[in-house]
Image 1 (cartoon, rainbow, N blue to C red):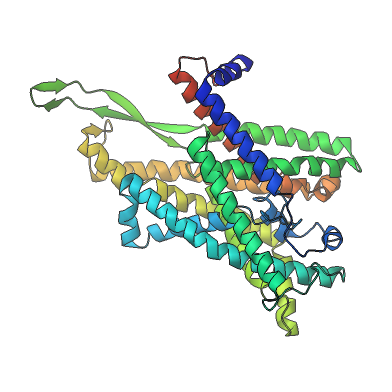
Image 2 (image 1 turned 45 degrees about the horizontal axis):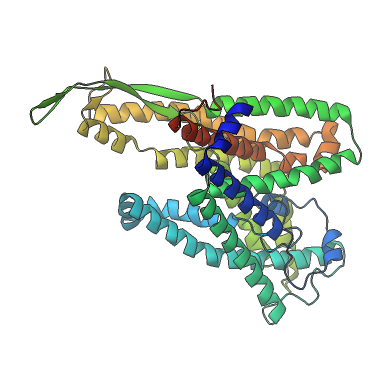
Length: 439
């Protein structure tokens, strides 16, 4: 392992890519300590840390939204925009045709996602600022900002603009990592935000440590990491046979290969979808927390409390939505009809299965069976650590935020990013005839 890492740094282009990623991540963490103008720092520090709304948002921003950093929104607006564009691709024929135009179509859809992310960031910034002001006044009687948050004040507009620009800058940094670094830049930004929360979470636990709790939760964590890696790398290999082909005066010998179908083809996307859906009503409710109508204000705060990450309603919806979106996204990225058609055009077939419609039906049945297992896995990993941390025997861990801050969702994202990055480094090293990471 150490020798392989040294080989990676000996290759000038790989070394530059790795260093570039590290520099961008340092810039991101530096921006996380730049606060928006006009906030009451002491008032924000006195705010209760148990808000599920902030716990969810902080999953993608490293907790910076609670400190009112300029990058406090994280990549949540861009992720929401990407989700919306993916859904629209399956419903709008013109976008569906554009997605099939290769790199040009993908770049065009990505541009639309960027443009859509800007107004979404502005709306989300308004909702968060309004919620912070009213929640802090309600719970602590303390002002969150130096002036009352309202569209009528210049300071409030500046705060919305700062959060929106910060989200756009993060989007740009993520794309720089994808283009000039190694791995997916958006995943790296989320990865850095999650990892940055670990020291404070661990520090909160050590304020009143319970070593038996830590040992038990650590064993559960190791088992979860092992299962994540095992399932993430699991795949169903469907054999593909190619017949002899004649092109011109040449005969090309047929061969055999396989079509790999991963158990969890959707990756962490179902979790991100589920979190975004659960955040949506909370964000809408946050717009009305400063309503002058009593029942509207109380109902808005009620929604925020009902969808707290420690409530049974939230956990149940989280599991069901993650399970459902695993099926939804899998059959967006894997299309049995197109795969069967491409096999037929290239002269390939599955032994024992006729080309055309029988091949399509077979691929759909196989994908459906393995997706059931993958969906149960993703939903269980997302919810199980939060359930365990909420048990009375793990009260210290739950109060330290481990159930959400270092829960299954965070572990799944971190492990997935690490494994995919190692694979990309392995591919780069294999091209240079070096011995890689993965044995």
